[in-house]
Image (cartoon, rainbow, N blue to C red; front, side, top):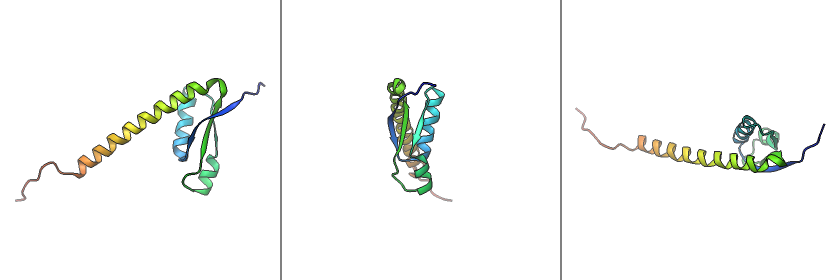
Length: 97
């Protein structure tokens, strides 16, 4: 079996986000290894670094996918925040009775 060089392409501090990244990369046909996820889950300490490793020849594509996913997630988060603030702030007040 040929040994392939794995290189880190991304770092997470959230185990769930790291698993989502791994799933996304694997769906795109990119083999992926997470380093540190066990420590993050066991220790439960916020900020534990979880590194995403991929084969060197797929690193550029993996970075592109992860960055695009990050930007999409940020936009969704902003939209969710706007929606929540719209729901929490009444736009008109009608008198009772």
